Every structure is written in structure tokens, then in C-alpha cells.
Image 1 (cartoon, rainbow, N blue to C red):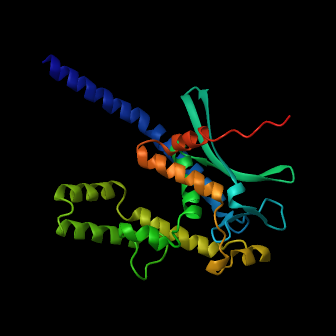
Image 2 (spheres, one colour):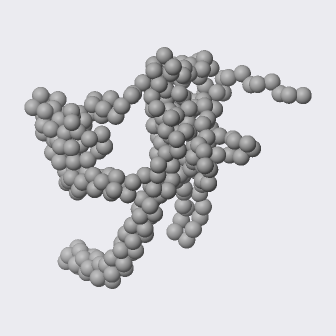
Image 3 (cartoon, rainbow, N blue to C red):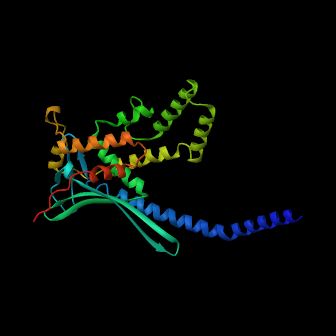
Amino acid sequence: MVGETNVRDSFQFALEFFHVMWPQALGMGLCLSVVLLIIWLYHHNLFPKVIPTRFNRQRREVCFMPDGATEPLFVPWESLSAWVVQAQGASQYGVIRQYGMGMGFEHEGELVRVEFQCGSLQLAISNWEAVRGYMEYELNDLSTLQDPLGLQEPGDPPHEGFHTFRNARAGLHRRLRDKEVGRIYAFFWYVYHVMTLWTLPNRLVEWEIKRIAKVGRRALPPAMQAWSEPLPPEQWAKPSSELLRLSAKVKALIKRYPRTPITEIYAEVYRNEPKPPRSA
């Protein structure tokens, strides 16, 4: 009887708590949705106003278009600085942490930079690794990245969308027929995609891409257009011997300690580098 009473009291408390809190939860959800919609609209309205930073692997250069500038600035890739920041503070809700990633260079005594917030420290590092991977590895198109995953078929658009889900599901069925995966794996594959609203995220991506195309982008300056033109292979810039030497050390350490975070690998490589002599 005591156990039944406790269960009944707990159920009654949960029911009363739900009736008290659901209007507040609904209001907070609506407010959060409005805030996210405003942020989304703000960033979409930047497309016809802002020229994004561009990376040219053939020239091994980066192009910045600072606010208010009339001509772009070109900087060698290996002279670019990048950083990841982490900040934390206390509030009535507890400790709040913020992360960000930035890159830039010094121009006429001023730092020209691009910075943006990230959801976590790992994501901030991953953003830089994506840029570095594009500039340093010989992956010349999107299909080279997507083909090993079976997400890109001939004739598909280069962006993600409904075709990405369709190809992933077809690949799952093929692996299931070939006994590369079992039925339990396939079951949880479907559970995961049902929980993530099936194809709705893919269709939202397609809708957003169409909207961006409709809004349009700011036209590139003539100097940037000329800079973006492809070069013959014999004119492609080569990495410096210093970068090749350090990259070889990084690869050797990764092979030796594959589970070590990349930040610690870099720190170990630079820790063993000879220190430059101090000026008198």
C-alpha cells in the first residue's frame, strides 16, 4: 500500500507540475524560435552585402575584403594566423562558456581578421582543420570528399539535400544485402533518422539554398575575379620547405600516437623546434 501511495503521489505531482509549467515552456519556446528566426534573417541579408573570405589553393593565397574597403587584400597562405578562443563567466544559471575561431594577418599596422562563434572548442578547431585540409590536401572537388561515403551520384547537385538522404539509404540497403552490416545496425539507422525528423532537415537545406540563390550575392571586384581564375598546373604555387618539414613531423607523430589530440601534436612539434635568437 505504501508503494502504491508513493507512485500515485509522484504521478499526481508530475501532472500538476506539467499543468503549471507548460504555458511557460511554450512561451519560452516561441520566444527562442523568434530570436533564432531573427538571427537567421540577419545572416541571410548579409549575402548581398558581404564578400566572404576566399581561399585559392593554386596560388596558395587568401583574399580578404575588409568592411569599407574598395579593393581586396591578398595574403600568402603560410603567413596567415589562426586562433581559437575560449571564454567563460558566471551567471545566475551557472558557468557559461563561449568559443570562437578566427584568422587574419597584419596589414599596415592593423589586424585584418575574420572571427565567428562556435558551439564548442572541438568545433572551433574542426573549422580551422577544414580550411587547412582544403589548402594542404589534394582534394579538388566536392565529389572527392563525398564519393567514399556514397552520398554523391552522377548528376546530383554539389550541395547536400534530399538526394543525400536517398543515396545514404540506398547505400545502407546495399551494405545490408552484402552482409557488411546487420539488421540491428539498419534498425537503429532508421530510428536515428526518424528521431531527426526523417528528410525534413534535407528539404530545409534545399529550401535555404534556393532562397540564397534568389537573394543573390554581392558581385566580386574585378581584381578578385581575376585572382579566382584557375592557373595552369605548371604555375601552381608550392609549399615552402619549412612547411613540408614541419608537416612531416606532424604526420610522424600522428602515426606514432594516433589517439593524441591534434592540438597536442602541434604543441609537441613546436616545443622541439629551436628557439630564434634574441636580439640585443
